[in-house]
Each structure stands twice: as C-alpha cells, then as structure tokens.
Length: 107
Image (cartoon, rainbow, N blue to C red; front, side, top):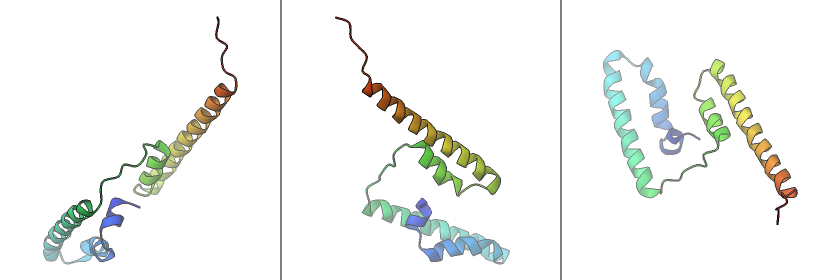
C-alpha cells in the first residue's frame, strides 16, 4: 500500500485521476485544492500515528517501487527483487552452514 492510498480518501484519488479531463480553466484550482487537502490529510495522519520505518529489505523496496513504474521497467525491478531475495537466501544458508561447523581454535 502506498502512502497516498493509506491517507487519501478514494474520492480525492478519483479527483486526481479525473483532473486532466476537466476544462483547462478548472484544472489549476482543483489541483491546488487537491494538494491542500493532501497536506491536511498528511498532517492529520502523523498527528494520529507515530511514524513507522519499514525494514530496509531491498527486495521489499523493489516490490513497492514496481507498481509505480511503466511495464518495461517493472520486469527489471522484478529481476532486482529476485536477485536480492536470492542473495538473502544465500546469506542465510551460508550463515547456517558456518554455524554448523565452527572453526577450531588453536590453544
């Protein structure tokens, strides 16, 4: 879920989508209204909820970004997400393997 989806009512999201189809004379005023309302909703959100940081997992970050990109770039992001997931799996495997065979210490 994006930040906009979390804080903005569906009606405001629909207005944003509808904006380019309005007469040019109305677009500026509605765009300002939308941005003003977004600012108000953002302030309200942070007054009610403490900020929470997601874990800095690159695979999850790539998946979140995927939906914001055009289709031709989405496949590249998927490849990066898969690569980070495989790297994490390899790291966990290696750490498990290393702990199973502790190195001998010389006395």
